[in-house]
Image (cartoon, rainbow, N blue to C red; front, side):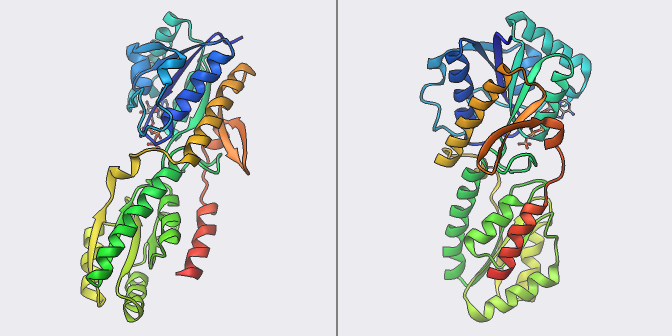
Length: 318
Ligand code: ATP
């Protein structure tokens, strides 16, 4: 029977992580279990930066962006001897189970810990929505709304100046932010890993748009193409003057939306329940509006089809 739970956030921060920590803390305490915050993810576990959390420790945190426990990346956590030091630190506090909130890298760390005897449950906290087991990750909805708001603002200026705005958004290996945004703002074109990059198609679409309207919007997922170069090409080959904007880390910040707060709360609750049910090496997912758990291994696969379904809608509506 689990007696003491640790909780950490790891990888890129995401709005709603605080709400998830709060849910873990309050659920654990309500079930009579001590809970400990591990600072800066696996780095803090390795360095032994661990503190007891109480109901009050998570007061006034629910609606705040970022993560009050801090987050970090520690490549060496893939090494067994590094994880062993981290596990020894957990033992000092008597912690036998950990809730890890983060992306797929964080899940890999959780799986590796569970293989060494620590009970682990992963909670998907990443704005990229790139974890295949779950329909949504915590932070995606907030980031999407942030991006849509930014693009709406860029549209105001690009239509006043008869320009094409090219906007680079996050989503390293997953085009969800790009494609969802493209639908939500009525963009002319979207470029992501799933949709591919086709310069001529962009030139054609923007040229066509220039006949009917006084601006065009192109959404580009990061790592696909140099948006400043693309702006030059569009300026030279279409009637529009094009400008590139890289939204960058602004997409990770801000207060979580109500949807992310609720998702984070439900998932944090479920994570503790799973640990109490003796589950380990699993992650919490939202599937068809149900909060469930599944083996982490099954959640680390590829999950492009839902994006492509959305892309079909985009192509009809643009
Ligand atoms: P995001 O999607 O926001 O980038 P992430 O969780 O995928 O979040 P990563 O930097 O990939 O972010 O992973 C977070 C941490 O998880 C790493 O810094 C490392 O400490 C740990 N980790 C990643 N891969 C492994 C692995 N194969 N084995 C053990 N630990 C790992």
